[in-house]
Image (cartoon, rainbow, N blue to C red; front, side):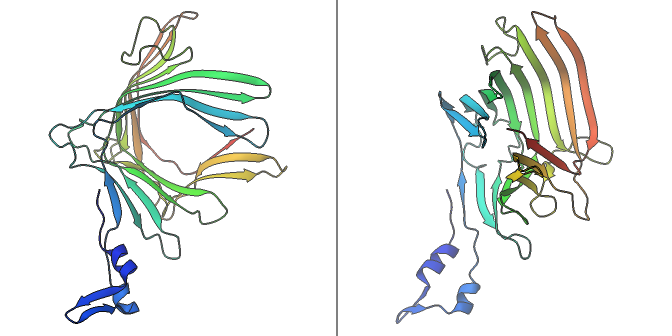
Length: 289
C-alpha cells in the first residue's frame, strides 16, 4: 500500500521552520503535488461462498449471479512488485476527476485467474436458471477500469482497457460440475471457447501486447445508468458513446476452438475463429424488465 504527501500537506496546512510551525498560503498549497493512491496485491487470493447478488427492476423482474468462486495464482519471482493500483486523476477540462484502477502488467503471464459463478433471471412469471459460467487460466496483461460522472444525465461513465488471454471459457447450463477440467465426463451440455485472446492490434490485424481501449472516459466514454424510454418504461442501460475526432480504438479477437457438447443433439466442433481488427463506434444495450 502506498500514499504520498499531498493530502497530508493539505490536512495540516502548515510548514516546519526553525521558529515553529507556520501556516501555508493558498499559493503554497496549490503548488503541492503528489500521486495519492493505493496499491494492493492479491497474492494467494481465494474466495468462495453462497452469496447471491440480485438486480431488481422497478417491475417484478430481476437478474442474479451467485455462488461466486475465484482464485488467483502468483508470480513467485515477483509476488508483490506488480500490484493493482487505484488513483484519482484529473479529468478533461471542465469535467470531474477520474478513479483509475490499473491492472498488473503481468509480463511473465504467471498471474492466472480461475473463476465460476451461477446466474439466472426472473421475469414475466418465469424463473430461469441459466446454469454456470466457468473461466479457466485467464491472464490479464495491463489495462484496467476508469470511473467518473457522465457528461450528461445521471449514472456512471466508465473506461475499459483489455489485454487478456483465456485458456477456457465454459458455459454450462446444467451446473458447473468440475471446474478444474475443461471437458469433465459429467458435463452433458456445454459451450466451450478455448484459447480466447483479446487485445489491441496493429495495421495488419496482429494482436499486440497492449490493451484494447474499448471505452475511454475522455474520448469515448461508456455509460451505465437507468433511463425511461419514450413510453415511460424504465430500462437499465449499458452503452459506449461515439468516439471523438481521434476515432475508436481498434482491437482483435482470436478463438482457437469453439465447440458445443450436448447429449440431446450431439457434439459440434466449429474450429477456430479470428477477427483481425474491429472497432466499437457506438453501443446501446437496454434491458427490459
